[in-house]
Image (tube, rainbow, N blue to C red):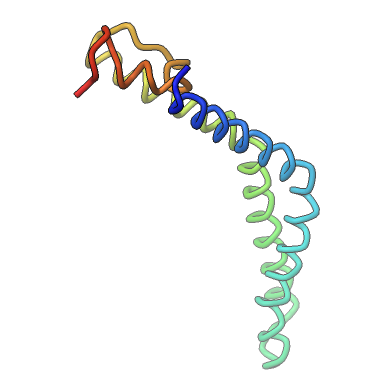
Amino acid sequence: MTILDSITGAFLAGLQAGIGVLGQYSIALLGVTTLIAFYFQVGPLLAMGSAGVSDAIGTVLFLFLRAGILFWLLVNLVPLADATLATFLQWGLAATPGGFALDSFKNPSAIVEQDGQPAV
């Protein structure tokens, strides 16, 4: 294992730990940011007196829709990223045949030195 592999491993471990910690607080953080965004959008309308009931209801519903989509993206970010990486790797291997696997990205020394020679 080279220094490049250990750096990559530490970076990936840090990313996974960060995703795990943020996953615990994602609903609370999303709720707070949704409430702040609501006050930023509806507050000026109410202060000017131009917000009717339909504007307030529409703004709230649209805000909750956006928050729900953002929450879905936060929950499914890692599986979406893995599927995207696997798709691009499959497309690349279809264009250039070779013995390259998805786990090789975790060991960059295998990419740098293929067949005992440095890759160009």
